[in-house]
Image (tube, rainbow, N blue to C red):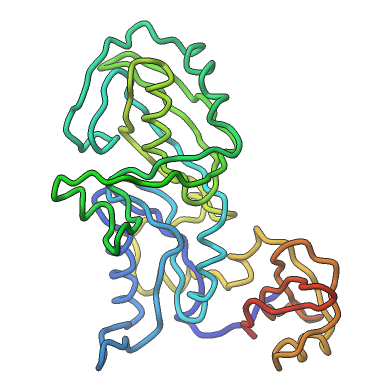
Length: 305
């Protein structure tokens, strides 16, 4: 299947984010590589750049970055299933639920076994609710929680629904402290640091996150990710994926040329029996956009070509 060649500076690139950088820092470097810079009246000159799912500064791994018109795909790429490798320290809690926070409690966890951990994981599989941590970017009363946390504030947060498809134990150790390595497959918006804290509480010893690496976001994996520190202008162009490739985790339907033209003109062809957002391609395999059914009509949610 082909895709529209838009511009050498448009498409999607998968970055292997290093520790110590924010997701915004990554976007900033790619902006410089593609010549995107501040313009007059706050408008940027050059292609737009945006990422599809924040990683905390301490976390590493897959960060999907969209360039040019591909930034319009961010809502769908952001909503894709995520996979993480996480290490949870047992027997210690902090106010940030990770290694960077102030210690709030310690408990002997040397007796906890792999079977004990396995025994509590089931309660976190499926559709659950999580309370966002105070260090998250969610806005409460018009301000991000992490900004309130920096001032020492703790405010009430409403639980948020998430889905955890699976949690696999990859290993357990006791030196230099009891810890368990996990692989988590989950919906977008899942807080792994909150999961670490919840697992520790379920075991009766407390726990917090010590390491986090995103290994996949939708169909984008570490296998195709480019280490940010190795990225230059030529490497960026070589690694750019067309939008259709980046959307491969969504179902695809081939529509007629007449239907494609109708959609481009804002018209609504007859419904196709689609049950979810679907990538529409024309008979030549070019990406038309993302569509869904509304009643007996086919409606575009995004038109790319």
